[in-house]
Length: 79
Image (tube, rainbow, N blue to C red; front, side, top):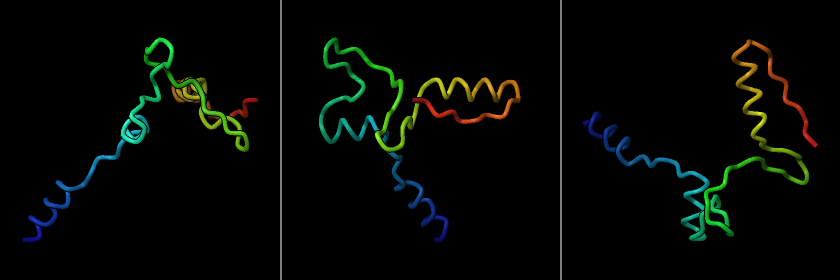
């Protein structure tokens, strides 16, 4: 009985939707599609007026380089 209950719970567990999937569902518009040429865009960075850079693609590259060579990663403030 207990095994069956666990199995049912695992089957019913929903997979989290991505930002892109949620935006398409809500607004019927793809946030990563260029409004002019309709090509897929890449995310370069996210800027917030109060917090500054929340995400920047160069930070991921720097983290990978530091991990590869065993250098401690220090987050830099951009801007």
